Image 1 (tube, rainbow, N blue to C red):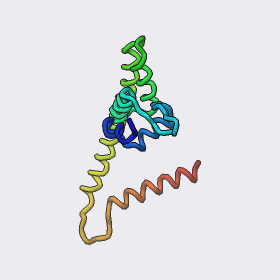
Image 2 (image 1 turned 60 degrees about the vertical axis):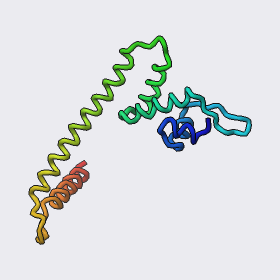
Image 3 (image 1 turned 30 degrees about the vertical axis):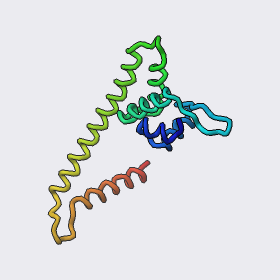
Length: 139
């Protein structure tokens, strides 16, 4: 199979497939003229990687998950540990986004949004900038 066929079957763009090849996640065969020749197992690996990336796993996590997937002697505890670390990352990101949303919602509510030039949103952004400047001067 060529890269276009594999891209269609795996649901990944050709550019991503080339990148995964460059970093060694997939290793398609090469013909004498240098063209890639993908096998069904390559398509399966790419779909696996696409799903793992969609769940937010890092490239290194994907590399480890792929190794475990291909290792019949693996323990599910190894896989679970990687997934638990990713779940913790997601939970932290959700907490950060929730806090960010609450702050922004408060600022939006405080802003009259009328013809006057005063704006609590801009004032808050400027205040944070001033805090950073003061910290940089002190440090």
